[in-house]
Amino acid sequence: MPLFPVYPLFDIDIVKGRGCRVWDAEGQEYLDLYGGHAVISIGHCHPHYVERVGQQLQTLGFYSNSVVNRLQEQLAERLGRLSGYPDYQLFLINSGAEANENALKLASFVTGRSRVLAAQKAFHGRTSLAVEATDNPRIVAPINDAGHVTFLPLNDLAAFEAELAKGDVAAVIVECIQGVGGIRMATAEFLQGLRRACDAHGALLVCDEIQCGYGRSGRFFAHQHLGVRPDLVTCAKGIANGFPMGAVLIAPHIQATYGMLGTTFGGNHLACAAALAVLDVMEEERLVENAARVGDYLLSELKAWQQENPHITDVRGCGLMIGVEFDAPIKEFRQRLVKEQHVFTGAASTNILRLLPPLSLTMEEAAEAIRRLKANA
Image (cartoon, rainbow, N blue to C red; front, side, top):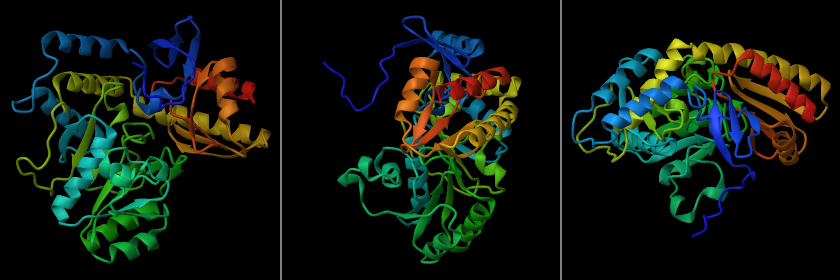
């Protein structure tokens, strides 16, 4: 049975990883500046992570959410403390799309409304409502286009205020740093104004932190750079370093009722062990601070490269979430990076190089990355 060919693939079989490096089946080493779509937060195969997940698997890998799960309680306490949201509630699922799906569903329950505002170029997932809130007609099937979502320009506060004033909006969902949209950043003025407008008109503010959260921006959540507290915060990707997991952080004013939300696999014992191991390493190795420090260095060096390279039109980002925009498509540039410089990167649109390395990237590895990028030009 062949695989359904929906992914454009590099013809490389990656079989091993350690830290910020991976190896293929032929033994070739690669510097990983993409972390598998920002998923690898603490580095590949961190010894503590491997040990803790292995120990949990020897004890209990899964039981349903019909019984108490102390690992979920431990994760909620640790995540609340480290993120700065100890008073919020936690709902665990399996992916980022599910996190956004459940957050928007919850907003609809709370407000009794069905309309959503999202930013142009947004990417919120591929499930029913999450994909409807994604500004990419190529991946929105007719069955998903139910008319719930209005797209407005990121940072156009007046446009969002005008729609909120109609009084029928359940939620505004925003990535404080758009990933697939090209590392485009919300401003503090916009997000703070959005918070006030949501409060004034009875809508909930959802911050999608699936890619930009969990330390990647140099703060635990990217919106913390901008001085707001959302009603709902969605997480995934780096939360469990490759084990499928997602989460919604829910403000204390939102009340749960039995059966409102549910999941079979979400928050299972093995996933919680993985997520707790991630928080152990993030705290012990100060990876949020490392992302800020190494990210500042990378941004500085990339902006200096921009001055030397007339084909680079912009460098932007925050922490270890960086976009390098070129004046032409970068498909061949990325292919040469892999084949000749042995560096994995991501892309946004056709001309933006997207860098999302593990939060454990060292200064030495960052300097090596700059050398390899320049050598590829």
